[in-house]
Length: 273
Length: 223
Image (cartoon, rainbow over all chains, first blue to last red; front, side, top):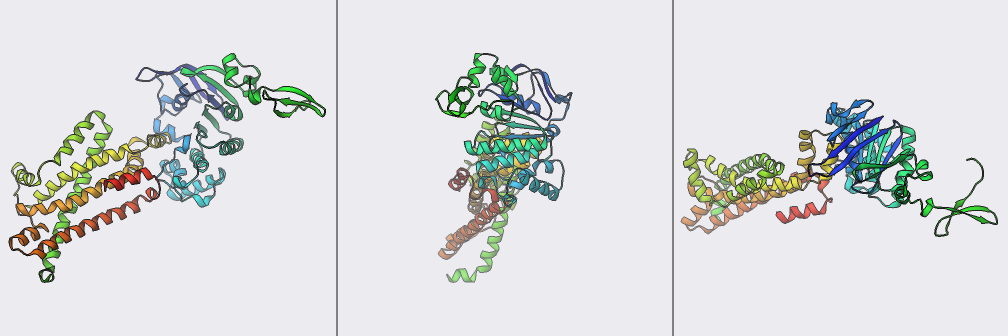
């Protein structure tokens, strides 16, 4: 469990990125911070592994204040995946994945074995182990990034817009893959995105944030869709359009669901699912 | 060309002298530029000063430096130390800037990513910052090497023997092949050292090959 208690972050230039933020992030679930850019969601994420220190308030992991832990050791114990994978361009794929085990003092051989094992887990051909990141596609780089995040088998995985820079088809593939991984691995995932669809797809708990990391609404995707806190949230999640605003249409073969543009999105099936 | 074939031993021993003096200066200049370049990169306030002052060193006329240094430091002008120290100063003038530019060229996102996965500051410098600054630093080192090897010939004017001897002796005795032999020998060792540095770069930085076109063209423009 990760807990933010009355956390504020004021940067030296005076901007308040996070203003008195409280949230409990349950273990072994995926929590997504979603909001437009500059809302402080990445700052929140970075306060968990002490990349950013709060100006006031505390961040606790399983009841222990992270400020009491040594930053470097803390970061090695938490997986981190960022946009474009954040890979070291001068390390091979295997070396990139093996980074944290190597930092933790594992032998080169053991770390490489672990890296190859993880390439399998994230669906990368081990024949790519000795390539450099620049020789991979965006989607492959991102998989390497995920593998690196998992290499030290951390309980917590922080993901900062990890799929933001790949095309929609690859993104959908990576999202499915993450859902599959999460089912097998059972990590506490904290995921940052500006894409509501991604947030609702991946999140068990979704926190919709506005500037200063102000909580507009926190809940499961179903709770938010069924009962948006206010008009802004309703507009933000697109409750009035696209595939979230459906009406029932009677056809000779039964009832179907139609979106605002009149396109049929699905068939209404009666009874409990 | 008779002169050359009769004096191969002389040319050979002068070349070795020349090579030794140059390589020591290049290595010393490189070693001293790393911390200076790092300081200039790390501390914004010092940056302008360090870059300007070291850059100005290059404007000191070489002959003047070779005559002033012995007076200041108290060693004989004719000693090899005198020449090596002067060449080291010129090497620093070029290299400090290259080191600072190199560290600047490292993508801040990669640096942040290294911190995020758990590199401490010192370890990150050696494992991430310095290697990634490598291509730009190498470009600077290649310029430094060629310029040092060519500049070293001036040592003969204060009495430090190296390939420069072939110029002064050849001019005094009007032996054109001797002067030409000196020019060719200097060009050949400059070329060989440059090739050696390039080969070392390819071995140490295999990842830079074919990747990062921007970085590569910067290296080519500087060399």
